[in-house]
Length: 309
Image (cartoon, rainbow, N blue to C red):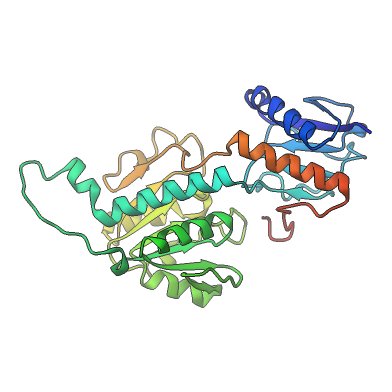
């Protein structure tokens, strides 16, 4: 029986994913009809990235929606979607995020900015501490947070991880809950945000929680823009309580040219490039979930609709 898969994602992705999905499904022995448009009542699976599709009511045969993105905040609360929703967890995306996070943590740890932008003609030998003397806190211990935490711990950093629910990550001090967040921030010289964007995580870093950080702490946010109260962060940067922030994600993207982050001397802006879904590996994850659905096996990476991730 032919499986009907509708690709509902930005048009630029279609020529990239179409041959990959068809080839992988063919290798799995699955006869597939893959299109960007079907009569909704014959669609078995929707491969999804935000692209205009919002009403899933007509999709009466739908078995699952398979997201190309790790973040699903744009669809998780959609009341017309009653079938399983799977988010993207794939090796390429995880590896890319790990490399970006490790790179920027090392940049702060080694004081690289000072040598790139300053010290002209000044022979100032500020030797950085060893990684074992540097405290790094990861907020969020999902797939991306765990991978970054493990990589940093392998380099010798003293890594603390915080999540809303209890986790156990080898080599990482794991904390959770409100008191755990306070403890995680109290000693953090570098903070990395890798939480999902949900109503419960919005403004995780605000005036109150930023005040818990040691003076001069650095912040790295490749997670989601709403995790930070922008006004509170700018005030903490202006006062010197936060020494520097590297921000890859924002509430409005592209970041408006008038936004103060662009010109603040203690902010580095990167244009949402920390990690990207890699089609070659992501397509394999999508196809594996289609195979599982057709075999009656549990889907991978299902979203808890109550939690929003």
